[in-house]
Image 1 (cartoon, each protein chain N blue to C red):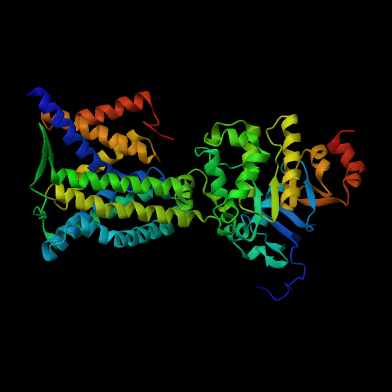
Image 2 (cartoon, rainbow over the protein chains, first blue to last red):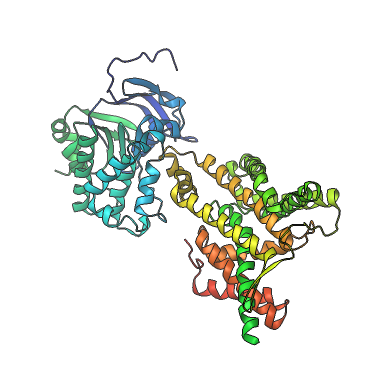
Amino acid sequence: MAPELAPNPARDANSIAVEGIDAGYGLVRVLEDVSLKVDSGETVALLGTNGNGKSTLMKCIMGWVRPSKGSIVAEIDGERHDLTRLSTVQIVDLGIALVPEGRRLFPRQTVEENLLLGASRPKARAHIKTNLDFCFETFPRLAERRHQQAGSMSGGEQQMLALARALMTNPRILLVDEPSVGLSPLLVGRTIDAIKTLKEHFKLTVLMAEQNFTQALRIADRGYVIVHGRIEFEGNSADELNNNDLIRQFYLGV
Amino acid sequence: MQFDLLINAIIAGLMLGAFYAAVTAGISISFGMLDIVNIAHPGFIILGSYIAYIVNSRLGIDPIVVAVLALPVFYALGALVYGIYFQSFEKRGQDSLRGLAFFFGLLFVTEVMLILVFGVDYRSVTTTYVGGSINIGPMEFPLRMLVPAVVSLGMFAALQLYMSRTFIGRAVMAVSQDPQALELMAVDPTRIKRIAFSLSMATCAMAGAFLIVIQPVLPSSGREYIGRVFAICVLGGLGSLPGTLIAALLIGVIESIATTFYGPSWAPAVSFGLLLLTLAVRPSGLLGR
């Protein structure tokens, strides 16, 4: 481990700090000098419309895309880890879970099999029973359909399964990429509520990328607005984001 | 008399089908679950036959016991072959056509190797049960068919339990659907594929021993099975072990009936006819994905 990563005394601290990263695909640069942090126990919204780099930032944190510059450091149970040096499997094994854009379920497997796959890592297997019970309690629909193929469910149910499956990995930090995509307004509201419930129950630290500003700001403590791969605005409270002129004009349409 | 003939044709067919299931189990894993067109699979089955033959002729150990002892060797061989395949093709995204050429080459290499070492004569094994049979009324169960069939069904049950009840087994079933999503479950998809491919190779040790118990074997005997195993795998439905078992039993019974009443040359025609007919009605196979 790099020497600059000093140990932190807070045993239950779980945070992410992204510092000045550039990233892209081949010659296309998507992120430019992006910095953001999610402190322990916070829910932070990463706001922006399509194609501004929200998903790329999520992929950088998960190790799917390597930044060409900058650092990504996660603190898990008080221990600091340089994520740019770890593989995706190692990052998930630390306790960072991503609910990916498009859900990425295993469509030909049953609801229960999808959930059990989430609990594959040894640290998650120990909590398999309680986590499974909690998921079925929180999402009764999943309990009803536990033996049904995941791909045969509705979009809203699939989103719930994607959330539940990420929880089965027993994470400390939860990243959610565009949970509202393809859902009706009613279901978007329910999904956002579900994220809040899970966060409170598991005492998670949450980073949520979303283009539905109104819904995201209902549960976010703070937020960043990303435009063309740069953080253009940082709001230290949901109010500050709601009352920002730029956001009101371009995104909230008021 | 006709009825006795039919009953015995069905019994022989079921036992043949159980043997086909063992031959196809590996293909059902590598081709059906991992999308790896391992056309060399029957070649490795013949390698299994020769290993059973050589140990049996030198030390007199039962060929099926030899196969069980050889399982780790075949598992390791599978890990090696997958390692080469992954580094040379899969990693670079050239898996389909060049991978096919790679496995076609492997098929020839194993066949030529066997010819160089053992020559082109038929080889067979001696066991206590090869000539015996159990008779129940008009029904006859030749032991050289019955023993491989029973062990094969046991192997199939073990594989199915492993795939459906263990974390690794579930990951094997998921890996071809979305390998990247598997990483989000802290599971390395390449490791899962290596384990599954090694398992598929390990089944060759068993199937090879079954084959040489049932009939004498030549280095080129594997070729007869290439078409048949892929047909059974597709008929059963890709990625489904229970489907593969049903399809194997079905093909076994149909071939046996066709052989008994119309002559052996009709057998392949009838079974492939059934395959085409099934695919016309159910393109994903009997229990396919």
